[in-house]
Image (tube, rainbow, N blue to C red; front, side, top):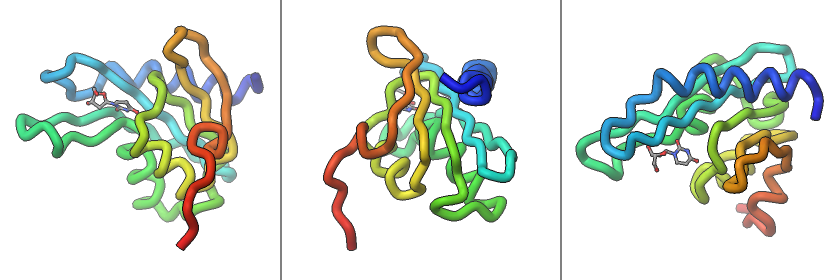
Length: 123
Ligand code: THU
């Protein structure tokens, strides 16, 4: 794995401490790096109305988009958990080149959005 990808994953681990997850107590961190080097961090933010919670990946991607990033501008994302189904669709949408995440077996692995969600539809 590239050193820069490992560093991105380490940033995700560090930011996970700031997750707001009082219901599940499952803290997740994410860090997205744009091709120009900027890094955007995110954490999961839960709510007493459970479905309103947001995943760490989506909070990081939302920050990147707010700062002007578009699909294709984002190189890699580090995630401290295996991305959920909905986040896999987001990773495909924003055309991440590499997704570095902690697998259910506890290993830090690298995959593409297509590995994680094959045969995505096109509008
Ligand atoms: N969670 C994430 O933040 N990302 C994922 O891809 C997996 C799940 C969060 C959502 C919820 O706050 C908690 O983990 C338990 O599902």
